[in-house]
Amino acid sequence: MCVLRAYGERFDVDEFMRDSKLSPYQIYHKGERRFPNSSRNKTCFEVSGLQIDVSKREWDDLPGQIEDAIDFLHRFHDELQRLVSFAGVEDVGLDFPHDLRIGRPGVAVQCDYLPSSLLREAGNLGIGIEVSLYPAGGETDELGDHES
Image (cartoon, rainbow, N blue to C red; front, side):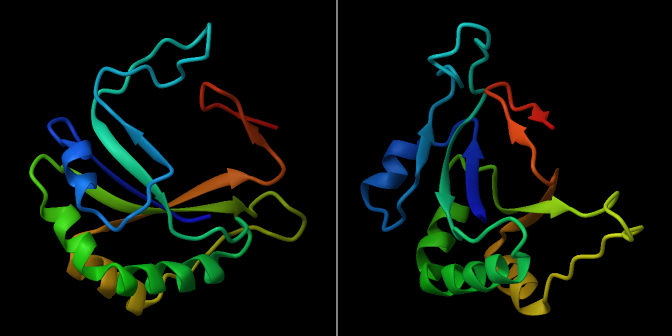
């Protein structure tokens, strides 16, 4: 489940999306509530941005997520160049959520490889890469806290 995120304090996401071929699953605007239906969490977005599904592969399939991300970067190359250089965009990045294996029986260290083809494609576009590690089997609550 790799995700592309783009954001900026002065990013006019609606203007960008007028002519975009990208299909975000979330668009948000500075000042909007992050969780509008929550009675506990009244925090607001400090920037405007969007999030796009790049891969729907499982968290334990990092190689599959990487394969999908490389395909996405190729398929939407021109549109991603436009996004990265669009006025007000401060950062664009790929986030690869992945299962944490450390602590499982027989696992003392976790090494996850990112191939040069992914790094080159993303780097040439000015897109950063993040690998977010989560304990296996946990869930995230509405505040973003990971529950075991």
